[in-house]
Length: 632
Image 1 (cartoon, rainbow, N blue to C red):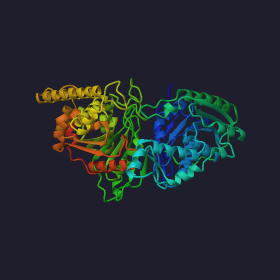
Image 2 (spheres, helix red, strand yellow; image 1 turned 135 degrees about the horizontal axis):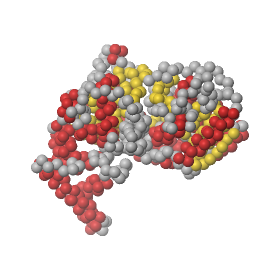
Image 3 (cartoon, one colour; image 1 turned 120 degrees about the horizontal axis):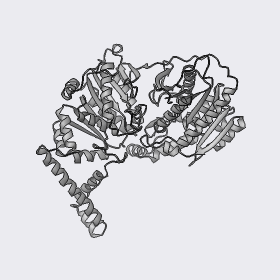
Image 4 (cartoon, one colour; image 1 turned 120 degrees about the vertical axis):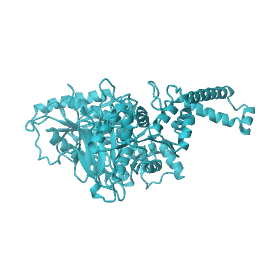
């Protein structure tokens, strides 16, 4: 029998609240007959945490199904917790977060013993926190970071090896300055944090972090063998295995897979440990003094002269399939901010859960809430922390059920926040779902699409680049322009041009031109063809839904909009019904901070003020949608 639905909650101190999920066992444990063990799961850092999010959820679910209560959580300054990357004393704050999670699980799960499980830097934090306590029974370290100095070197190399690092260096005109924060796949590591991490060396531990330790190293690049031997010399009963699955677990969130062998080894080892603990005497503990869990927290204003905000974690439907985090202003605390009746809905970017790429959605939600908006960052069904709908698979990025999810979120916002205007914002697949919801008649007043990769998803398309044909057409345009240059003719005379290849590409371009001219003719004759973006743009514009596109320069969605939108897209743009913005030196998810700042500035210009595109209730009436449906 599967365990009950996990409970989202805020916990920790009131000045540094943390977000987490408590996975309870099927039958609640009597506090007087405590559970033999509880599992605390510790995230890796940055992009690795986003990739491993689904894996950690599966670990927690498997533990709860086996009768082991678990908690997974975000350290301070990460995920849905309070704080930022650049707050001071990051290492100490992260360790305090682990301690808070331990105390919370002991109190909420009724656990006699605690086992910590961490991945990468999370394993390192788990080991360090365990060494500061005497009540940790076991530690599971998956591909641990043994040397903080080596880890920082790895992060520096990753920064420079990625397109984001190259773009940052190019824009700055020089190599990164050493006293500036490192930008690693969209996340920041301050100079102080780098210095703190370089002092970490697990080989210098002088006492065992736990009596029993399981080290699960990566098989392709093992690096924890010496540390395993060191733990044995300290007196820990240590098991070491190098297993496959790490690389696949750390792929991009829409491609990452749960490492089955690592999960199975972990659960088998935990089961054996639990059997031993049940046969032994219970440990003695001091009193647990953890603040009670809560479903909402107060945060200070995210912008100057803005209002402080409240964030509430909630399920959006009575079946507890969809979850989201609602950010709302405390209007009576800041007279300069007038609470708006507008709600902004943030939709998943690919398989990334509701914090958004580079934690962008958390930043945006807290900013807009401080300015008076209601903001809901949600997970589409099957993505992140929302369950798949019955009969559907999880982690299906372009799910056909997304429109239902968006309508349910709108109903929730009407009931929970009395919102009457709705605007949807999404990146990549989130842009696709937002636009398709508007096309289907969802009561949206505005849609902001950031780097959409397709407007007509078909099963079998690549999640990374689903429109190779449009790329060919773009290349053909480049060839056609170059045909009229003297340099091109000289190159042809020297034999430096692959004539058959150019002819093939130009022919494809010509066929595409014919195809889209026929589409334009069909639209003039009121005979729109299937998968006709121009017709959909017209349809949405007629409903007075504001349309905004934001592209990273060179992102393939720009060409896609030009080709498939045709003359209609040009006309709507001239009439002010479509806004198009292009950001230079940016990648698909805006991992460079300068590009991300420009994105935030563009979104601020579009969304800081209440929408004037139209009335959501008018749009709802036009398509037969109820205006006051209950989400419960």
